[in-house]
Image (cartoon, rainbow, N blue to C red; front, side):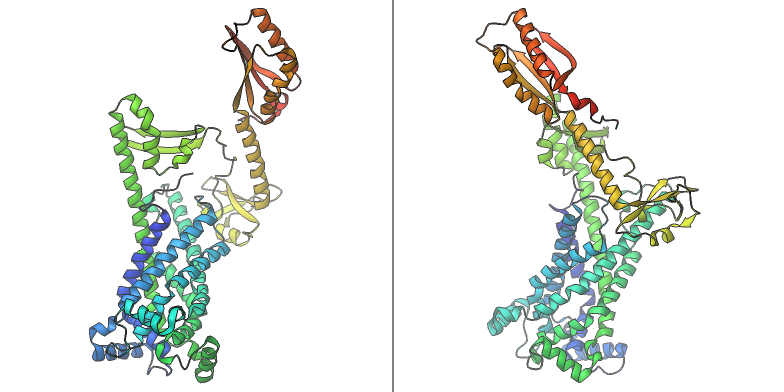
Length: 561
């Protein structure tokens, strides 16, 4: 199955670009609060007053001492770190999700799979971007006129390398890896809420009798804001202490106080207690929640924009190519049709090179309706596998089929789903009457075994449709005929049908009718042990063709099975 068109060479790069753009926008909007968060984290005394008063007084102090530019001190490393982090994260995260799902549309990942993909992407991103965060923290915690102040990102990286070597650039990496849990928990919650949101939208469209188009493959900005904010709030409150420890270790001014992770934890606990590990949490919530919401809303909109733009571009290219081809001769259309359509719709060219593959184009003048690539021996899907399941069922209530076949009362779908163990069973819609929809509880293991058996039967059907040709010379000796027919037997055992072709060699004289009849009788006797003719043999001039199939072939499933 070909992947949907992407704006860049791969869909993962589309998500990376969307993440990079979202990171830049979020930094420009929320940088002053990010600056305050780091200052509060590295402070060893609590800020005066409440969170709101502390934020306002700190902003006034920075403006009075350093001017408006002071509020955006370190914006360069922050943009680089944030944009790189989100760009790399979404790149690796979507690559891992694609690998986990096998690029199968409609595949629903489990929370554990989301957790694993998110944790892996976060870990790789944390290691790659750690030097940027070290520079950011040190620029945030030093005045611009300080002798040791960094002039910018590259000056900071060079200064750290000269003073502390490579280890200084990756200071606090172990804590950053611990922080993988933050992003992992956040994305598990966010992805599951998105799945619920899209399932709800599909049910709404089904009730209204509308069909979802690519332009509808998007939730509202309000939904993205609520989902991302709720997911971040849950993840942040459970993993915030590590951020405090990391900031204190990376702060150049307090290296002598907090040289190692154990020493930092011990000193913070002794001096400040539990509150010390949550220092700056209020400011962080004020900064992170709006920042997270901005990031995800911008990311989702950019990703959707890139996807729809790519689809529109592919459609325009395909229509333009077809119009050009329609003005050419039939020979040109025959030679270029497959290549141009496959390119326009990003079909796999390697699949089209195989002669067994078929390209189907359904179109009307000036537009393309559908394009698909399938194998000539394409296996039909198992009956009933395209019914909606679980959250995709477009009804709020349904009747459940009991084990004895009776129907239960009309029950809210949410209640039915709550009683299902998603690891072993699923609900499937089997009755589509809107007034009385019917669902059935099915075992995943039984469904897998049925699907496996169905695929086996379909493979047998596809193989039985393959015909092999075996050439035989009229001059073959009678004693060698049985030996030569071994090749026919091997092909039949593989499940193929065989066309046994008798023809004269070029230097030989054409055989007489009597000689041809004798050889065909001998061949029929030998073949009767393992094959039979499924169509009348053809004899034209000096060429005879026998159409053979295995004796057990009649027992194989037909296409109608």
